[in-house]
Image (cartoon, rainbow over all chains, first blue to last red; front, side):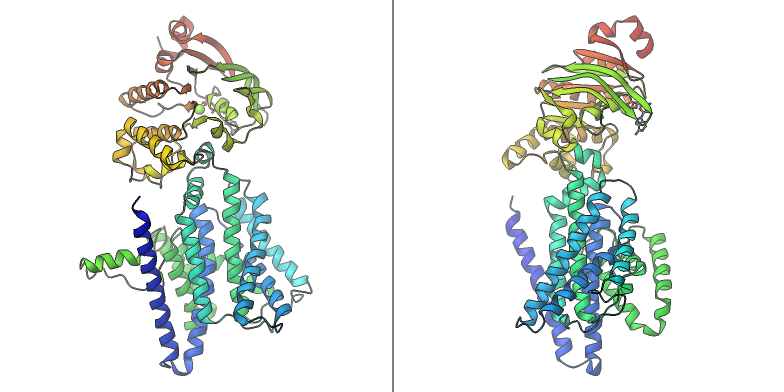
Length: 339
Length: 234
Ligand SMILES: Nc1ncnc2c1ncn2[C@@H]1O[C@H](COP(=O)(O)OP(=O)(O)O)[C@@H](O)[C@H]1O
Ligand SMILES: [Mg+2]
């Protein structure tokens, strides 16, 4: 009842936190302390941004709806190709880069969302592990199809996609996407979806249209995967359908599980860490999947709910603790996980 | 208000329900008793659309329920407390109750109903911020009933609310059912605990392997020698 004001304040605090974080990044890159490695580090952070969007969108499915998708890279590729085709057609037609970028993101998201709807309607009527199987099949079909369509390069690399994804824009796209997903989870809508995961008979008995909400959540998840794909396409500027293979889908799912199903904090840190790790240790990149598997096994043994379980970082909570002088007892680090 | 006529239900080749007819009138408590596997749950699922009948009609206030989606049943004023405490374990008690009022929009009215539910179940009020999965068996059953009350139903279908509860809690649950009924809600009660179910009901049906074997006034059935022998262990 007294919530709105408190809520507003906490939103403002979070916004300030995010802006401060952003300014720190700007300072890092503009001051030149990184020297010749500035662009390289920027690139890693950009990669982290779209990976966060991808992992968080998959977490919506795994953590909130409780359904497994092993074909998330398929939806990402739909977004990547749809947006790339769009910008190739419109590049140099007088639109500003920012407008083009925003439109590309929307096109990528909508295209992937439609794909999600088409896959979700038949797959989610069934219960059990069908979705995992259907999504694997979908991603494979999409990959093979994109290898054969002329417009997607016919199996060859398409290159020359306009470079629109820079770190500063991607940072804000990531913040907006994660915020929307987080608000979705915290809304009445999100609680309804959670109720379905917990007990679909009781949910239906309470008047919840189970299939509708499942398909809708799946579509939203695919939508954000498409946005992630669009960011990816306009960062890489070249791509080939085999980039979006089963391994990549499995990698995303691994990041969700390691971070913690149901925790966006976990997704953010997991995605940021695991997407920069292989870059930082490039010479060992062949062992990446091996390293993932070992980390996954260790996490599953010691923290079956993922590193963060379903815990969420809260800047407001940290500030309250700091005020009460409790911060030194248990220090929270990192700020990228603002929600 | 509720009338089943010659309803048949199959699970694949298994003929689970044979020509079942039963009626529940406004304001009654009607019990449906029967042994494990008799088909009690199947009948409730058929009424609420979770299971499709193969033939027969199900009328509720004149409306054909066989064509209504499970999630629309509650909008007609019929709440279902499923067998085995289907609560939402990792949501709080308050969130569980909130879902119960899912179909309603008027916030003030919902708050009023919530107050009346908390009044009936003070234990739930004490534990409103606790995760439902951490409640005891009896409290979970109260929550399931309370959640059904949140939709302000005209009729509640209850599937074995006493299952797995200690004798003391069984008494408590039956007291609650009486209170629910006293609040003006019609009750169709499915039970294996025949003695309790017959003692609070107006009328009752005895289900044996998918067929109605006996029916009538609950008091008469309670004194029927056949019922006594088969269900009351006397
Ligand atoms: N999903 C199902 N698939 C096949 N048979 C079922 C299923 N559910 C129940 N049955 C069968 O239908 C009969 C009635 O079951 P049920 O309605 O659960 O009985 P009750 O609730 O009286 O214990 C039983 O023989 C049971 O084995
Ligand atoms: Mg049963």
